Length: 487
Image (cartoon, rainbow, N blue to C red):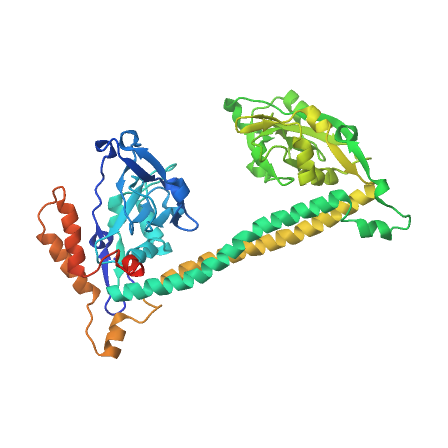
C-alpha cells in the first residue's frame, strides 16, 4: 500500500476490492449475432475516449481471437499493452460496444467506487508508476489483469467521490478547452507558412522592396521558366539496395528523412553497404535539391535542400536529386518554391496514380514551370521567408511548451484530487451538518463480507453477485446517467 497519509474517512483497498470480475466470453457461441468491438486502436489517447468511428462490427462466427472481453456503459478500459501510451477510456452511454480486446483490463465498479473516480485514478502518473514495474517484454511490453487489479486505490466515502469527480471535471473542462485552442495553432501556422510561400513566389512579399530599389524593378523582371532549364545537374534517381544491405556503412537519405524543406538529424540517418562507385554516383553535395518521386498522394513531391554534408552520404531510389544553376536560381529560393502549394501542384500535375501510391518522373520535374525573379530579389525573398518562418517556429515552440504545461496541470489536479485536497471531506461536512456518515472502511468491510459469504459463481450467479453488491452499497453505477434522463 502507499505511504500517503489518508484523509479522514478514506481507506485504501486493492483494485480487486472495488471492481467486479469480468470473465471472458466466446462470441462464436452466438454465431449469428452482430457484436460491436473495441480494439486498442479505437481509443483516442489524447481525449481518453472511444472513437465511435473506429468501433468494428462482426458476427460471432467471424470474431477475431482477441475479441473476448464483454463491456457495457460505465466500464473503464485500461490497455495492458505499452501502458505509457495511456490507451484508457470510460465507456460512455450510447457508445456501441459489446466486446473489447483481451489487451484491455475491464475495470467494472462493484458499487464501492464511482466509475468516473476509478477512471481518473488510472489516468494518474502515480498509477502509471505503480503498474510500470509489472510490464514484461521488450518490443511489446505488457502487463496483465491480475497485476492491474492487485494495485492499490485510495477510496473516499461515496458522496465525497462524487464531489471529487464533479470538481475534477469542472477544472479539467477549463484545461481541455485551453488544450483544444492550442491544438488548432499548428494548423493555423501551417496555413501561415503556405501563405508566406504563396506571397513569396508571386512577388507580393517583395513588392515594396522592388519599389524601393534605385533602378525600378517590376514584375516584368519575373520570368516563367522550365525547371529543367534552370538546372546545372538534371534530375537523377537514387540508389536502390535490398533491405539486407542496410545496417552499417554509408548514411543514406530516405523519404522519411526530410519534411518541409529540411533534412532531419544527420545522426539519425540509416546506413547501408555502399561501394566507392555508389558514393561517387549518388553522393550528395551542398546545394543539391532532393525531390520525393514515389509516395502516397499527400506526400508526393516533398523536397529538401542539402545545406551541408557532414560525411559522404547517398540518397535512396524513391528520391530524385538535382542541382540548380546558381547563376540563375538560388537553391534556397528553389526549395521554397517547390514546397509551396503552387510548386507542389506543378510537380504533381502529371503524376501517375496507383492504389495508395503516386509517382512522378524526371520529365515531370523538368517540366515544372517556375516564376523566376532576378537573383538579388531571390535572396531578398529567402531572407524574408526565413524571418517569418522563424517567427512561426517561435510560436510553435511556445505552443508546445504551453501544451506540456497543460498536461502538467492535468496531472497536478488529479494528484490533489487523490490526496483529498480538492473538496471538503465527508467527515468535515458531517461535523458541520451534525450528521453521521459512512466511512470508506465500513463500505469496504460490507463488500468484503458479502463477497466472502457468496457461493462459488455459476453461470448467472455472477450477475446476481454484482446486483447484491449494488444493493449492499446503496449505489448504482448507472444512477447518474438515469437521473440526467429523469428516470
